[in-house]
Image (tube, rainbow, N blue to C red; front, side):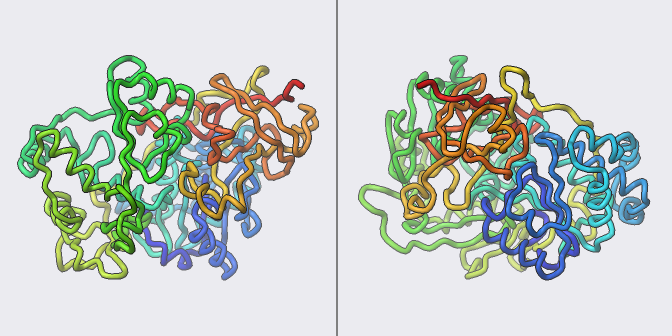
Length: 526
């Protein structure tokens, strides 16, 4: 996030796109609702009638996978009606003319024909966003998990920059992270192309710095992403996996291919707090500890580094993850000899400039937001104030293209996946809690017109199939999902929807297109 959660209420207009915030991020969702109740204009763009729609001034119900069209249509109106921030564009950005030229043909009437969003709603949303001072954008995986996810994000950045909504309280481009420490994991180099602090593995000076610190030879070649690793196993290019705190059998796309890959491995280690569906494939299972059994830090969605403090001792033979990793490294001949999480934090501060001013002693109860470049620094609540970190903000001309897989006669429906409020991600924790009493029964949402067309009824068990697999699941007939689209939550192993999803990748970020694929629904033969 460029901004902080505390300034949600400072926005005159909030634009939420590709985020079922009240269910996937309920605390933040409540803040958005409260802002709307207090008078903030709310624009919601989502194919489904999510809870936020009730509070929206404008609901843009776009056809799944057409976000770039919609965003370009909004920018077309803003430029045509001269609602741009000329001074911001001139002083702080470059290549605006390329975007101006690119969106010229995306008129609201043209965009309506493909997205299904009425032209008058596109115009209303454009005016609400551009005239607001300030306005903010919030998005999640409904934007990023597409083959054009990078382009979707660039389009959002274009919209924010052309209206000057960067570097101000109540403004910004704000992606909401999907789990409690996803931000921290990325910060610490859990990506294939960077060291901690987003420092490129291909930079010789950075590589040398980490080699000196770790007393080891390091590769300058970027690694593989998750889907690429699964593909590499099946090509006999990867022999072993060490999976920690992840359940790809349930959460990765084309799950049957994932199972094939895990079965093909010579050696699989899974480190987790429960025996997950993925752990059942493992040669060795290492028992990690929950948040309550260890010390350390989590970095949340607003870049806030927060202390976690051990409440109870590790249960049974479990150990904190860092201790397990250290002991394995030592058994393999590398002297990884950290004595505490605070020692690890000290090393992070010495090697990652965005964390340089962060120590255990400084975190206190509230934490600090990076970048925090030195010990006297108070953290950074808002990014890009006055200037962008790398100079001028660059506009990118983005053209629309279809999803990797679109409906046809054999698979006539679009499948969306996502979360429910009372379950969490792969369910490895929430399904072992009392939340299971509230929400334990997966369903496929089907629009009444589609239910009639395919002769399926509410409560009936059906087969949902794609080119990659099939599942059995009960029907929920509802207007919540639009005609031609079905929705399934991905928490449930008994109806593992990711057996159906496609592993097509964004060519730049290598993110899989989990949010759009073609499926069919049919009765189960008696």
